[in-house]
Length: 164
Image 1 (cartoon, helix red, strand yellow):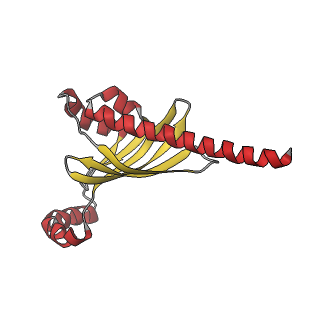
Image 2 (spheres, rainbow, N blue to C red; image 1 turned 90 degrees about the horizontal axis):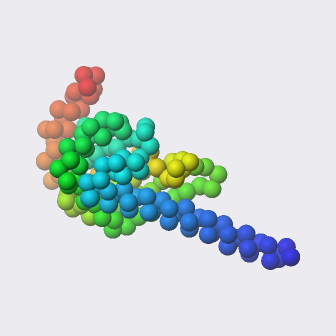
Image 3 (cartoon, rainbow, N blue to C red; image 1 turned 45 degrees about the vertical axis):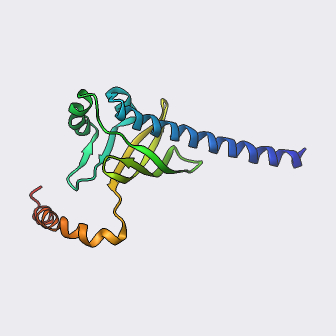
C-alpha cells in the first residue's frame, strides 16, 4: 500500500501545481484582455486594493487608486491598451499564498516585459504588484541611453535633491 501511496501523492502534487499555474495564467490573460476590451471593472477587479503598477516611464509608480484615476479616461474612450503574451513564466511556493511571474508581451511599444506578484485571496488570485518595461536589445542600449540622457539627468537631480 505504501508503495502505491507515494506515486499517488506525487501525481496529486503535480496536479495542484499545474492547476494553480493555470489559474494564475487565466487571471493574467483575462487582465490583459480586459484592458484590450476597455473593461475597467474587470481589469481593476483582478488587482488587490493596495496594488502597485510601475509603468515604462520612470515617474510611473502608481498606487492602485492613482493608477485607476490615470487609466479611467483611456478605458472610457473604449480602448485602453492591448498586450498579448508571447511567453510567460509563473513561479509558486507551496507554503505561501504568493506567486510571481515574468512575461514577454507584444504591445504597441513593441516587445515589453511584464513582471509581478500575485496574492491568493478568498476571491482567487489577484495582482498585487506589476512592472512593465520596454525591452531594449543590448546592441541598442548605447543609442537609447543617449536618447534619454537629458531626461534621466534632470530626473536624477530632482530625486537627489528630495524635491519629488
